[in-house]
Length: 403
Picture 1 (cartoon, helix red, strand yellow):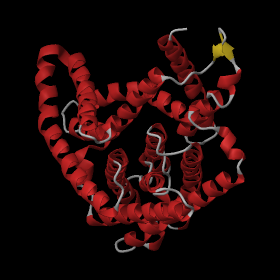
Picture 2: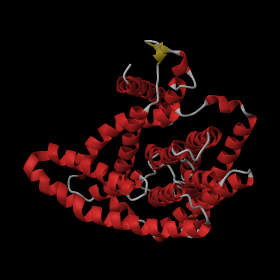
Picture 3: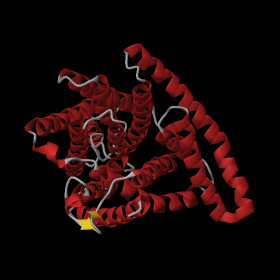
């Protein structure tokens, strides 16, 4: 069968399975993204996908066409995140949010980096693990706070501002790690240079995007209507992603910059509606695709399972300490505990970083399984802890965590 046809069949199966399991996980009050990841694991080449055949070929075949769909999904995820957050969210973030994001990014990165070096891994694996430790899952924390009516409280607002900045830190680290790995030079001086040059380059791309994309969209809207305006917005996101990829950075950081720029347009809500619809399809493909890359056989190795548990403990402790301590400068102890817990879940960006590691060959199957396992456990455990902390705060004293 033609590789393209096999790819289309695989994508169709993954979408259906991802939506089915995300609904099941949502019904169980678990993060839907874990359901999409599980769908890929279950139907991947290391599980049922290899055992079930269609016309003499495996049910699920991960080829270049499936990888292409998944890459578009990752770009749309970052594009949507940028549009939803917008530059206004960054402008409104106070000094305390900057300190929380900085502490909550640096400490987890160092813990993961030195842990992997201590167990004998190479520099590239240590850098990728550190990058996966950095970013907080804004969606999960936002959902819990919204459900409890705490999103607009002092703790909730500070947490979301810090998570936004935390995402920026994660994007910066992602770009530096990808650049360092692709460039082949991993010495501290080279990494420092790449970090500085990346930040400058990314800010230039962001500035150009903010200056051009909103005006371009609004100018073309008068020619082709809203349909053309939305299409141009998507094209701008894909185009910016391509430019950053050509410059040696990750295409994802370009998509994020384009999203922030589109968020400045007066048609932000209309564009976000279309991007959300596309993300609902391609995002599911991406997370299911990540699941297909996980070789379940490595989980039979007690060492891998032990590393996953240690990584989870380090990820949660590092984020809690790094975020909670700076927040004490401005918030109460109870609010600081809530923020520390609320910053723990890793979620989507952690999976994206792990996927870059394995697709570039920097991560082996064991290290990939370890990082994905850490992301899954922090994504699962953190909302449960946050909900208990917030409930206690509301019941004990509404002016505590709820003020």
